[in-house]
Length: 158
Image 1: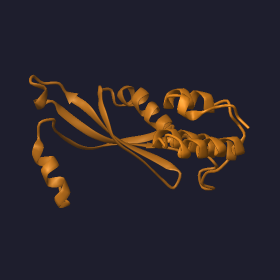
Image 2 (image 1 turned 90 degrees about the vertical axis):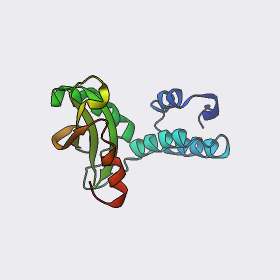
Image 3 (image 1 turned 90 degrees about the horizontal axis):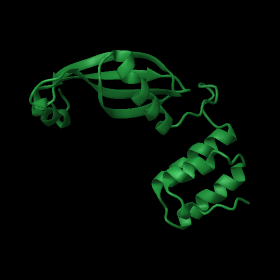
């Protein structure tokens, strides 16, 4: 149906090409072609995201919103620093539950020399099904070089 071989494209190029495909059957065919060929998880995820968009799939609770994890990541990168008023150090986690998104980010609250003494804040950002930030809160503050946090985490405590 669609004259597109996913194995001939990088995942980013494939995402761009997928934006122009609105036929669910063609997308299913592309997914099968990818699975039978290179079987790249990123490529299959891109196809699945587009398929969900054109199929109108989504939780009834979220009104069929179809923003994918990559779009949420990009919005968090673009907006977290401005929203919180300090530089973004990194995104730690993104998850979706009941049609809503939540991202955990680390923000540099105080720069230090050496940078292992930076004070970081871990923030939870709440996003709706469209990927719009609806709220945020600081969960904790710690020094970048504080390895005790990481050592304690698997034991179930902080």
